[in-house]
Every structure is written in structure tokens, then in C-alpha cells.
Length: 162
Image (tube, rainbow, N blue to C red; front, side, top):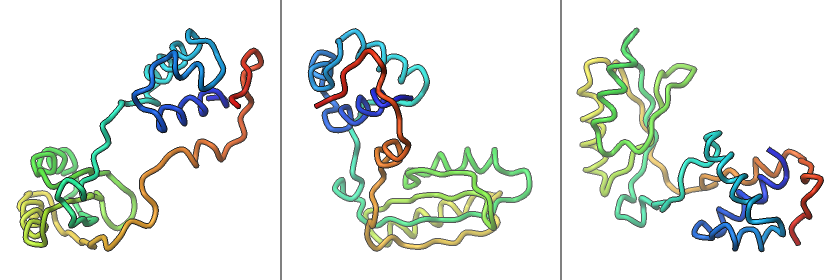
């Protein structure tokens, strides 16, 4: 990725509905360049979708928690299937450390959170769970600061955005 790719991603985050022509004007590059870059970023898996981004709190699921799971040896495949069947699990990752899986959970109420935790514990491969309730968001999910943190050269034939 170069500076033009980062600028294109910034523009897409700021204006997710912008077309190639509008993006080319914003960035000061040819529309064909924008189209080729977006296609390359999609094919590389950098751009995975165009939304909509959904705020679970605004959608009525204001109780959120992180749940760390210890899984029985060799049970990750079964845990994956079991966790995917629990609607309150927003995301789950296999991790290193004491636990084996870290989940983000959302619920409409504390009772809903308890129901989700009970559903998780019903998995035959979940040996133990530890949960912490989210009080507030300190840093919302983001990627642009990371992308901007690495100095990148602007492509030689393109003019940088103004």
C-alpha cells in the first residue's frame, strides 16, 4: 500500500457512498486509477465491504461485554460451531494466553447478557468463562490512524490530494 491507497481508504471511510468519479476528483487522480486501486484493494482483502456499519448500542443492544473462554483441548472446531449459533456473540477470536477464545457480546439488558452467557456455557467444550462488562467506549474501532502511522510515498505519476 502506498499513500494513494491510504488516501483512497480515508476518502471511502469519509464518503462510503462516493462513486469513482467523485473519489477521483477528491484525490486529484484519474477515475480509472481509482477504479483499479479499489478493485486491487478488494481483491487483496483490504476492503471487505461498504457497510452499513451498525452501532449495536443505537440498535438497542446497549449492554456489551468481553467474554474470555477456556476451551477443552482440541475443541476449537466445536466451539466455533457452538458460538456461531449464539446470536448475542458479535465476534469471537482464538487468542493466546490463559484463555483460548475472546468474544464480544451484546445484549439489550443485563438479563439478555445473562442468557447469552448461559448459552455459551452450554457448549460441551467450554470449560470456563470470564466476562467483563463494558462501561463505555474509550477508543472506537478504527484503522485509519494505523494506516497513517507508516510513512508512505505518493505514486510518482499522481498528484497528492489538496
